[in-house]
Image (cartoon, rainbow, N blue to C red; front, side):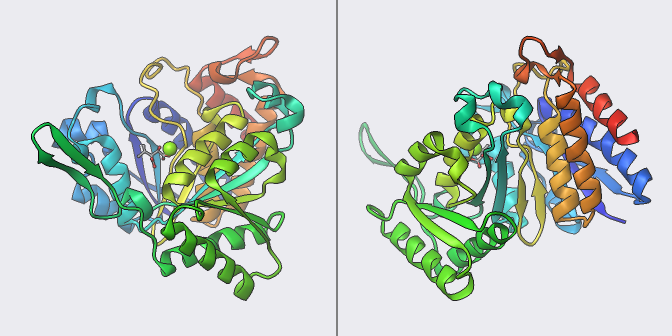
Length: 357
Ligand code: IPM
Ligand code: MG
């Protein structure tokens, strides 16, 4: 019985997660799997109830689950809290607690949606990238960090970008393993021309490839160049490997290639596993039943594949989503003239209909 902790979080996280749970119920029946769901508060909703973005109880439950399915966190209501009490800190805490060091962010341009991209169709069509982002190290967690007063009217803010051999090796292996199942090409992103830590990054990634993955092609790009090449020749990339901060930036850029953040799933895996759509809580459209549940649905598919060993069910979700898009149904974020606009729940119902065939 797979145990799944569900953390809908804030804003549209609640609506899109509900759609995914309905779909999981259908798939459970179809495949004779009984999911054991538990729901917890996370982010702003946890701050409102407990004063902190994630409680120890929720973290413990997360560790005891086979997978955690998240919605989204944050919103203007909690924006001005001190750093440690912000919803985002809860997200970082759960990633760290689960040792979910590998963040997988696929950016796939669906043929039916190529015109939704801000880039020309012939540039983006066929793009299929997997961003592998290191998630529990680098400048997000490095110490020392802080804001110190150094004199009257003068403060100093600082963070530390640090990676150890072991941290680089393990994330590089994830990237190379994934590349082996794809087009066998890894682009490693760094800033080795300026930062020592990134020199180490390049050296270790090169070594792991030479010793363990000689069959995989490896290219190194400085992050500024990578950002440019990604919009110039997106189709040429297969797996893009990056540290925490660079991966954060590059994965948003890759997301935009596809035309909608509302389409992109992600998996954060390590000891535990956290599944989170790439989009945020979108407070401006929350509660209006207009959010796109596809990112959450595809995130659920990743969970079925990477944590619950239900590959077949995962592919069923992906295919059902594709068919609904091909039939011309769109939520507002990917709507174009000539297509049929539907809301969040309705999009979920259409996917369910495809699954029930
Ligand atoms: C992401 C987000 C988070 C991050 C924020 C919300 C902490 O931007 O998942 O990409 O920076 O990791
Ligand atoms: Mg981000």
